[in-house]
Length: 126
Image (cartoon, rainbow, N blue to C red):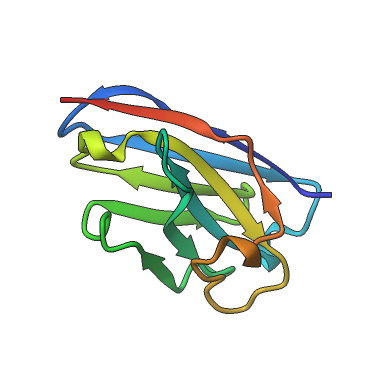
């Protein structure tokens, strides 16, 4: 059973940067495609970014493209989400997710992911 633990959330001001981390344990991390999702109050969870098992391919939601960057360190079993130029509308609980045995990008659909973390709160004040 894979366990995912997010960290790095917090309260920041608009325009600031924040880096989220997601540490994986209990599985073969370098076989998993990884993704970040977020859920704002009163809204459905939405896709943010995804990365292939090798880190060679990435994908982003239009709302974060050019501001956020996803990366991974397979030696540390960790995936990151670097968030720059944060906006109040980025306020949400951020979740990382893993999709087993994925060679390419794991996709933007929640149902394709097998494991989820508990989430970390990001609050951006204006």
